[in-house]
Length: 215
Image (cartoon, rainbow, N blue to C red):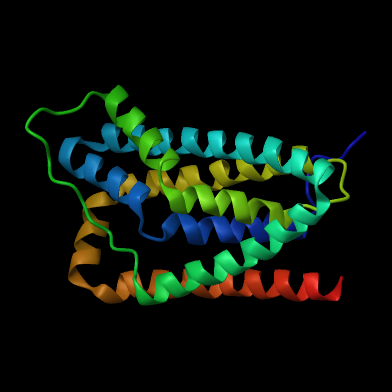
């Protein structure tokens, strides 16, 4: 029977990366906070769960796509891992130089329904190129090309991402007003998150590149 649960160090490392990504300002966080502040916490929660539904779509596409790539073209899988490491370094650089740019939308004249908030959460997540590239290049770093259980492990990590992100998302929605004020009041809050993001993903990229160089 193929093992579908990664080793504990992999689970722990991925959880850490998920936490850093989840608390770093971006479109998903901005939408959740905007809906919570403008229309109430229920809309913030709906947007958050919409984003989580989008994550499941990303995970499914990556898991099936990567498993096919492993079987059909191992050299391309190797190239994808190298590209992923370089992309992580680019994300780290962007976090330091550009910042998160958290921008909260103003309330519309006609309030949305909860379903609309949920669907907007899905749309923003699915159409965010950074999220797409993150999943395409980052998830493969946690599986081995020769592992017959790679597909199951990719699904496990995707579900882990959702499981870790939901409590953080709920906390973001509940503290939306306070967080919005904190970001507006002090740029150091956002900078601290972005530097944490950069440090974690630089470390991951360095580990990946050194590991590949030894092969």
